[in-house]
Amino acid sequence: MGYEATEVQSGLEHLTGFFPTNRGGRTLVVHGYQYRLEKRSANRTSWKCKVFGCRARCSTNTYDQIVNKSKIGEHKHPIDWRILQEQFPDEVRPDLYDSVTDHTAFDMSALDNTAMEDAGMDSPGE
Image (tube, rainbow, N blue to C red; front, side, top):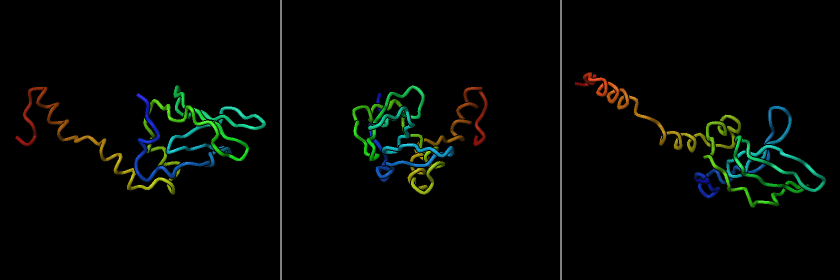
């Protein structure tokens, strides 16, 4: 299953551009997905997704305009919102990040009760 750029949470479509890295280079972010420099020629720069094994790629020209979008939506993983929040705190609004992570949170009390029931023990509330 591929994750298309159209599946980006509302409000993060703006997170597209070049951002500095800790080592003085640049990373390309397109709709929340991060790309690293793959190779550079006189007229074109090739970028590949930073996630190991992902086949998404794109190219930019000498003016930093994206010129090859044929594989830009071929991600095999969701956007890592936590890393984006850490690396680009001014770009990723915390309320959007929180709303995404809230939907994936577990109810630990329900998990604990289920584990106790599976072990043949009474739940704490009983």
